[in-house]
Length: 148
Length: 139
Image (spheres, rainbow over the protein chains, first blue to last red):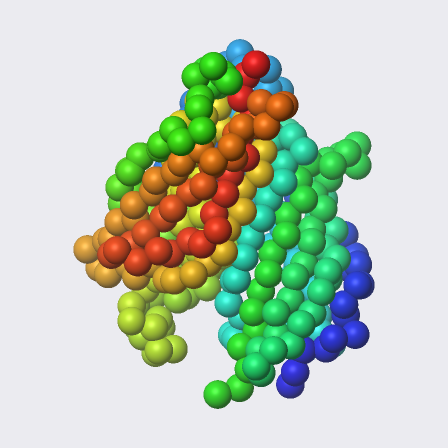
């Protein structure tokens, strides 16, 4: 089965809202060796002007990938997940994710390019908060390897 | 405390810093990120699909690199942009592995945003390519 290029330009149904709490932030921070006290200490975070403890910059991927599932998990998209390799990743934070946020993610299939039997797919996910204000724009490029 | 513009100049370096990675850390990362692909946890499975051994999540490596940049910035909330390509795998044998993270300030714009080129290698091989962070500095 090959990747369905008809999905290029399509925006998928939003995923979420995903609640963000202090335990999750502490867990993610520990897993990536993030030692800034603002990840675990609400007093330290507030002293720097944040509403509550702050997520490490790459924690947005947790919400991005749940939103992406609306695309990569769609049987009509033709993506064999066992052949997927993560090619590129970019985050632009409009503000940091903090405990208490309710994050919704909406994924758009930006482009699908086929080359040398592989498909290079770029997807853009807009993460927004409970007030629908922008939080993070996450862009991933995934490579679906062709048959051997 | 976040770095201020007067603290930072083009050409300033970060690290090199050796960051250890264990299989336990990858399990913790899998739980925190929800990326539970067994190639990052199960040696038998990884070898069964042709990999040399368990490999780290590319996003773990990116996360570890962002932690080094954030520690340099003095405030993790100041890392406004972070991007990379994934160019090679980080193999994590039973007794663990290590990645080396370093950075250099490439430019500082008029709004006080520093662009940092980040390099990450494992066993002497570059594992992230075109990895850059944008950090907002204090005036």
